Amino acid sequence: MIQFLLNNQLITEEALDPNLTVLNYLRGHQHRTGTKEGCASGDCGACSVTLGKAVDGEMQYETVNSCLTLVSTLQGKQLITVEDLRHGRALHPAQQAMVDCHGSQCGFCTPGFVMSLFSLQKSASGWDRHQAESALAGNLCRCTGYRPIMAAAQQLCSQPVSDQFDHHAASVVQRLEALANNQMQQLSGDGRRCYLPKTPAQLAQIYLAHPEATLIAGGTDLSLTITQQHKRIPLLIALEQVTALRVCSEFDDHYLLGAAASLQQITDFLADRIPGVSEMLHRFASLQIRLQGTLGGNIANASPIGDASPMLLALNASLLLQHGEQQRSLPLDRFFTGYRQTCLQPGEFIRAIRIDKVTVSPDFVAWKVSKRLDDDISAVFAAFNLEIEQGHVRAVRIAFGGMAATPKRATHCEQALLDQPFNAVTVSRAAAALAEDFQPLSDFRASASYRLQVARNLLRRYYHRYNGELPCVEVARYVS
Image 1 (cartoon, rainbow, N blue to C red):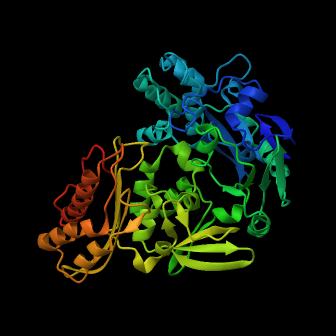
Image 2: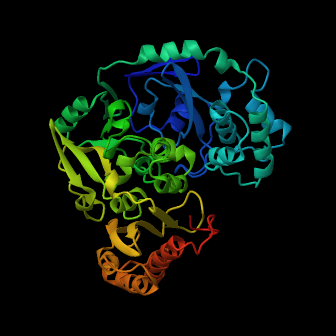
Image 3: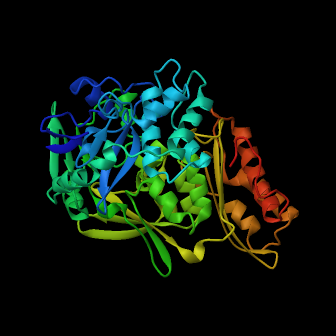
């Protein structure tokens, strides 16, 4: 059974297929058709809805892609759709701004834009174009109506107006807090089940009892199995309610990042600690995806083109793994064993990611090459973590994604740099050594020769950047 608020209505669901997405739940069960299906893959934002949750006695609103969000995620939250915004006969300020600024053309994408604008207004303290662009980057207008939509965002944020959600916030917080409990819940329907543990101990126990189950955190990749491949997962264990797995902490000598912490949470936490990671996570995906996708999920997915793993490999990260009551630490560079294969034992899960401060160079950077700047999959991903003293390389860790069957360090390249003067000759030798580290494949994203040449050029780019030969704001359309 799960319980949540649909706007202000308490909903209790006891028999739902846990593979059901929030989008299909809204349209098929609640007959709310304002939320649209565009791509069913989290790319277009037409299905965007807002989830409200109580955080430290205050309401916090986040836009998510309902096409990728499974119904188990709704437990203990407030679900707000475009139908909920109007107050009586008056449009919500987010809707009115779209009308005033002529932001709606064919209208199919409009509900998603409106919900992103709504969430933006709730989190913004005023008009900030960069913040607005980030909030709307996950919404596509196929009628190319972005200028009036940005004008609507400016009107909405420049002239904030209190709405019914502000007036009812205190009571909604109380109602959501009343739904919180420490008992593991279960949702089942159509012969399929989902467990919702609340603590790491409950998670460890249920996963040990059902090692055949599939863990789901943000689900931004796993849900594609349901929406794109039209498969059904018979047994799920949802990590959404295990709040201990979302904690990020700083200690004297290391950072500890909860495996279920969202990518946006990681972005905010590391913004002043390891800026290179946060800067790259802005390009990882849209805000909707970053708010749901998790760091642990991106690692456990073991995709050769995942963006998080190369950065963590270059930072010499290690994983805290748990199996029942037992925990072990494992260097990330020993975690991947093959294409989408890891050394996780049946019933074992990633609990946290550790980054030792001593290994983090102030010159750490990560660069992504893709066919478009935003919301795209890497053709090549590179992360550079070098310590250079008196012109010589004293420590070096370089990792790539998209170059092999797994995210992988460039060990031959590293050896060509280590203890050598950091000059053009050394970099040229190290670039040549990349051919010993990688024999990339050709696919529809890039050819093997292109990938190898790009990897070499990114190393040269790091060298020129370190020497101050590139401007502070580097102009590169598809590289950041």
